[in-house]
Every structure is written in structure tokens, then in C-alpha cells.
Image 1: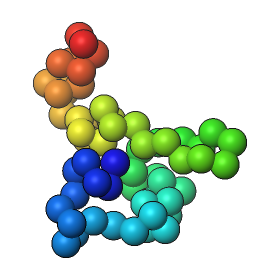
Image 2 (image 1 turned 45 degrees about the vertical axis):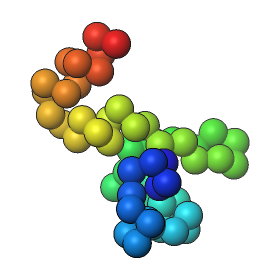
Image 3 (image 1 turned 180 degrees about the vertical axis):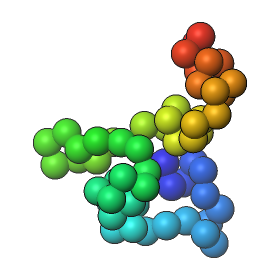
Length: 57
């Protein structure tokens, strides 16, 4: 996810991403020992229009 959405100069470290997930600042969940980011929720960030568009896909 970091490579997909962040510029090389601003890309957060893996440790930072895990901390954001653990703190609830980044939507996702841990399955086994691996964290997974909920990209749809992150992109929508509460925007009703974006949520509706993503649900229709």
C-alpha cells in the first residue's frame, strides 16, 4: 500500500504503517501475523459518495 499511494520521499516505513493500523489511524485488521489495510475505507475516509461508488463495484 505504501508503494501504491505514497511518493518515494514521503512513503512511511513498515513500522509506522503497523503502528497506524494498531492505533486505528489506518483502517485494516491483523490476520495471523500479517496486517491488511482496508483500502476502500481508507480512500473513502467517511465520504458518502465515495463509499457508495465503491459498494457498487
